[in-house]
Image (cartoon, rainbow, N blue to C red):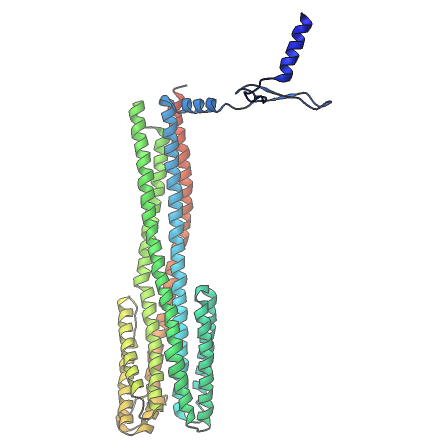
Length: 477
């Protein structure tokens, strides 16, 4: 009897349970599985298969009843605080990055506009020297060489500073090389007294420089101006994101405290009060720094940056007008088109000085210098149109108002008045450009500090909120 039972048990154990298809069935849920080691191996181990239905029932029990609702409230309050932390820190970083982008593009605009000014400065020097005939004055030659070298350097710097502009600036460098080749041909022929030199001068000054190179650089300036506008828009968007984060997280925190007070009949919860205080500190500091940096950015936009742009335009137009004045004389009666351009450039100078003044820049003696130069230019045109071309050239090229000109041109020297205009523009332009760069860089530190502070305060608020609700949860144990 005993032996038969043993054999039955052994037989049952050997076959095990089978499915209707005849295959061995797996263990039931929760049943221990015996793993038989290989012969001579260690003792058998037992693995437990988790019961999914049991896990679900435990989770339901964890979230059911008043304790479960308290746990959900704690999770929601913590998430609200973390939302404030992340959104606040991201908004500060977004504003900082946007202002840095604006600063870099403003610097690019100033850089390219300075290159434009140097190019027309070079052209003014070479056309003015061309009128002297033969070997140009050494000072004008040095000014031309220096201006071309500086323009080339600025174009290389601009290409390195903003890779997006590299293709256009590479094309600008090629046009600059074409310009200098044409000017070299013009100077060589002029030294030899060959009339063909004026043709090369016009080809370089008008066709290459004014019709191709300067408009190309205008396109680079326009592109960066658009990017500046985009950066300012991004800077403003940071405020809206921060405001949205504050409304959501603040509303959740307040709602959680109201709900908890009604459930527990206690007005204050220490943990949630601490979380609210941390959140308010983060919100307050974030609002202050976003407001102050926003005002700073807008102030720069309408003051120092606007003044820098206007003064750069005025200086470039002044050099361009000086070159056109000389080209009009080079053409000897055929320069009516250049005179029209001169008048347009003079108007640009006057309007740009007006914008700079409205932007807060002290343009000093620049308007008076422009008026003096305009008067002298009108005298030059009167002499040239009256047939006294040599006297017109003298007034246009001499370095002082000596007695070498007719009586009605005594004391007039276009070069002197033009130099006075440029001398009035340069220091104001440099000061405004430096101020724009400095003012946009200043908010960076404050934004970084408050951004990290908001992140830390939000995390601490989340911890405090969970801790406060956990106190109420402990009362149910």
